[in-house]
Image 1 (cartoon, one colour):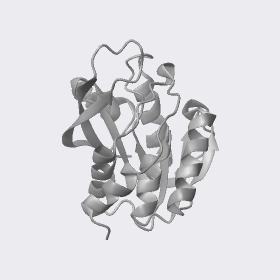
Image 2 (cartoon, rainbow, N blue to C red):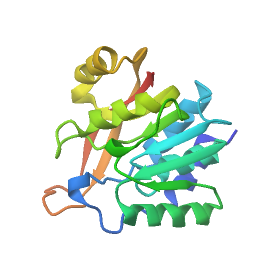
Image 3 (tube, rainbow, N blue to C red):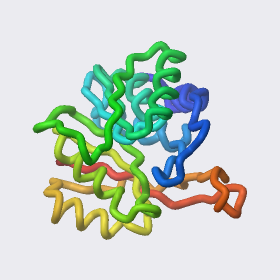
Image 4 (tube, rainbow, N blue to C red):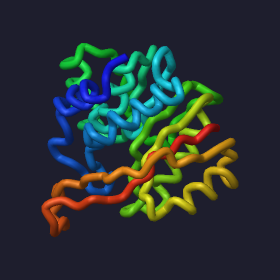
Length: 206
């Protein structure tokens, strides 16, 4: 099994958004958080190696490629932004990994039934478009047979848990750890060099 530090250094070499779109809340999932998310999914739960994994809102492919590095059998990345998918494709070539990409809005995904074992995602936090984080979660719980790993703002913890269990019929919803999501100054409205947002790493069982 690849070591955590090694995984983090691979992910650190990936290209990120050249022209991030604020309405899509495009923030790169940093190598620190991405490596821990996938490492935990594989090491503690065995949800990645040999599995079919989908990366929802894959952006430049960080979580999907991390899944491939940890031995996922088949990885599909889905994003609404074609520019990000081009970058994801380049990143996959650089690492000589297979990443299957679909250009699609998660809300319009027409998959029927449990198409994948595991979904990994860093959804929009819903700051710009209220509820977009929950749109991702409900879609993920519909198609995953084993688990959904997702990042949500710590400030929304109670809401996320209640919604997942009561409205989306998740069997379980657990916060595995709290992480600091480092948001670099990428957009004009950012006043600070960078800010830390507290985020929870969740594991949901559909």
